[in-house]
Length: 350
Image 1 (tube, one colour):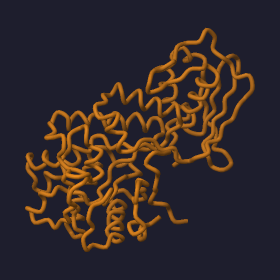
Image 2 (tube, one colour):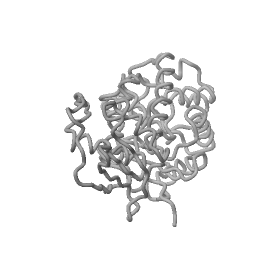
Image 3 (cartoon, helix red, strand yellow):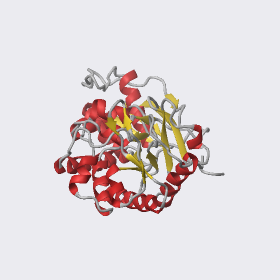
Image 4 (cartoon, one colour):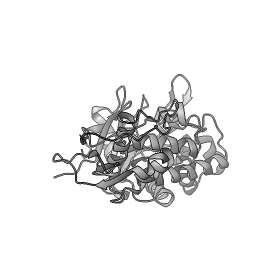
């Protein structure tokens, strides 16, 4: 059966996750980090998936030990979250945590089994990254990721650290430091930069921030993979600096966005598209590894100009390049306003 290589999700929404280890080390580490009072009274064990191939967890008490049986690490940490909420009246949230030790560790009087109603449990969108997380340090992200694990997330947008990918890519196509920093947006505007809405706004960005975001993304990827959460990395969808036109690259100017922000250009679908996308994906591999199965990116998001190109073939080229460097990867697109258009989707491998 043909594999699905494109995924459209609502921008506000919600794969099966890989098993990290049968003893669910990450789940035990989460207990130690957030509810150490439960450490000696809980045990995690692996079971198979439900009959419909969905994630499942079950809870029971045996010899005063809380037994969590789960089909994946994501299911195991969700089981922990379910127990804390429904039996201990404890919770972790963005507005404050209530994770103190109860007077007595509650037992599960009757075994309970929960089957997931969704194989893909997605978190975050581009705007959220900047509305909330622009200046998150590792301590903030660690809290966020623990919260996601407790709520069963298994697919997450992770566009942190793309500044270094773009810096390295543009150097290799002949851009100098000044050109690069005029293109990369400041840390509070990276979402709209990556969506192709603006370039350079809030900058010029410092090398210190570029390096900090790179190191932060490596920590994020390591932690979510331990939780069985797949990352959604930024893909190459043709966005480039307008300055590339001066280097004999054929571009499609995109005009302005939201009344005045200069949009990045779109690269014409010629041999330079293949060249730049190849460098881009090689940088992704060198900086963040090759174990990536999902990429995001929205050409002509909230406007833009396609000129005389065939949008259907342009999108197919984006996907073909993605598949060349990350075979069997899935392209994730935002369902937002008129995005993605029927024309853009028409020739893609669904």
